Length: 266
Image (cartoon, rainbow, N blue to C red; front, top):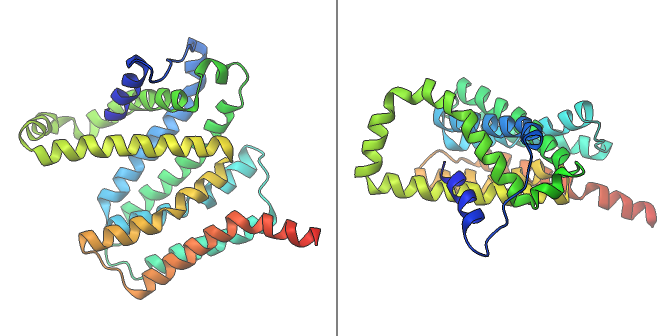
């Protein structure tokens, strides 16, 4: 909701961002990516609340594997053999990092995997919208595309919120009014989440769904280590080694085609 308000604010604020001139048909075309956006975010929240934050982030680090499978077999976007061979390194690091995770939870594992699947489809659907003639012109910018996706995804999430947390709405409103720490962190996290995902969408425009997922994974080592330190969660050498292997695999994935092309030229 915070991101939706911020997106609308940018449209009405002077000299900020021109509003999109989309049609009803354009909105219908955006529904799949909005649904995937809602599903990926909701499942991620469930995963992080079901177990340790570090464990949820570790499983989420396997997102590139989901993206590669979905991109190649469902969207016809070829992934090189060299990059396919890099994925087991990333996944192996994830497995190693989670072997000694004391806060393992099956519900967190399943939710994070569902989030990865939704994220894989979201990336490909987003890329498809960016390549749709006419629609990209009416949207005006990647920022507008993400703002509309956020608003549509928020509307789709309302039934889920009502079902899961509807009975606690009055309690939440009272806490929001009386607890400044809650209200501040809620608004701040909403703005940070919106800004981060808008930048991720811009990255997607210049790359592809799989590459964007790989780049998204690279940031998780900071989250895993940083959150573990702040919250006092377990962070033993095995987990650190797994994180290092996983992130190393991400770096290799990002550069392997360039390295091989350079060797072929020589």
